[in-house]
Length: 244
Ligand code: HPA
Image 1 (cartoon, rainbow, N blue to C red):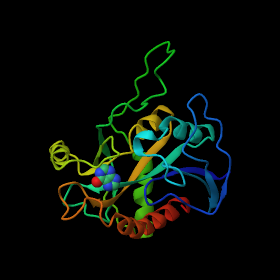
Image 2: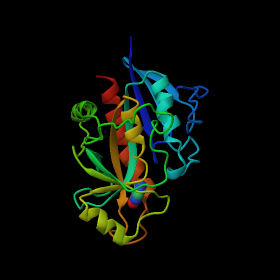
Image 3: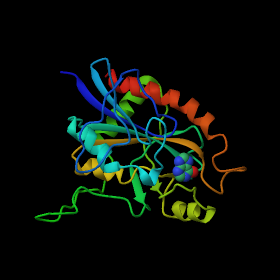
């Protein structure tokens, strides 16, 4: 039997593989996922790829149906999801083009559907979330990166903001004071829902730009080009992940 790996792509990685795009599977009662999966085999691994924003990038971060997305993987029996996230770099040690395997996050989002456990409960459900990313999967990513010769920083704390607007310079100073080296808009509630669903989840953060107030020009000027180059590293990493 082949291994199953779920991959969630973010900005700069809206396509992966040449596989079939099938109709989305039933994710009731959580509504529709962002799109259907692209499915393909690589080595001994069956990959299910889902673009978080849709193939045509139609969903802004606060409009993504994170519950349906994670449930789509769960209903297909996926037990590991590698998420790819374009982020802004706050730390001077994480300049554009850097790959970071986040190990912590702070959730600054609001008003998003956060949980599968809010209605008709017989007892309240509180997942463990001290370590928001799977250390088992993180170790697999680090091993694959080493094998592929891909440089990735092994730890980083991610500020997850509501978006879709970029941050103010003062917000970035606050996140930095809070201990965050990276800022993105999509890891929450995605990571928490994966935990609720019992799915190992890790996030490869691709630094696309310097965070607000740290860049000379506009915050995300030149972001596409940086992502295009960095995603080649992500592809090598993914290849090494599935060919283990
Ligand atoms: N802030 C928040 N999210 C982002 C950024 C940023 O600077 N760059 C890419 N995603």
